[in-house]
Length: 246
Image (cartoon, rainbow, N blue to C red; front, side):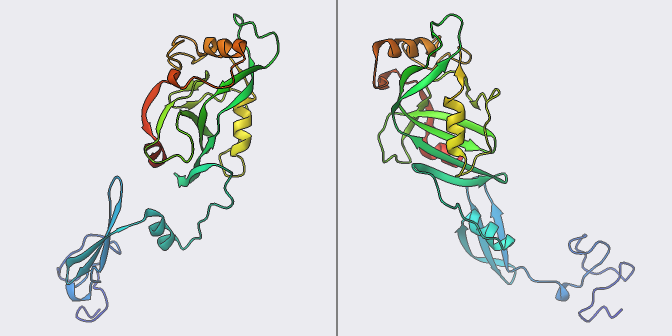
């Protein structure tokens, strides 16, 4: 083969500038024939930088949107479709939709299954504060908010005053949770609030009743309360921005 033209030399040719297995294993390239670097993407924890090169040296740098990079490299169209009311954020993470919706304060009819609680087989009327319901694939989580809409990026999040929720997310049990999407998030809300609650995971959800949040529910239900006392909410170290960026 002609090693002075544009054709790569064989692996048994005399040693030239060697680029180890960069393009084709076992093929060596002469430096003039090798493609010149014109751009590079550097991926950091929170952002991506595109560097434009000229004569082997970086000339300009830009912050680029990861979604735009994915679209440019994949040649795909990306859209959320119609989003449900009160959607606060939407995106894709590890190949699955992730979104969060706001649930306004209201009185919820909630079923209780606890031997030491006089539920009488009926639903309790329990007022809950504004809530942020977050879904990603089959995983869901719930947070409380004291602020009223419109919520901003620095809105602080509180522990949801509900049992049956791990710090990492909702305990799904046997409830029929669908994979999270704009079209199914309301079904997931119904699956959670339509299930029967017990004392499990009920600690540290209330300042007044730190051992059992169901005691707070019982007190509110018996009093016929219409609003949850916001000063009872337990704070987290999260804001809306931090949660959306997770």
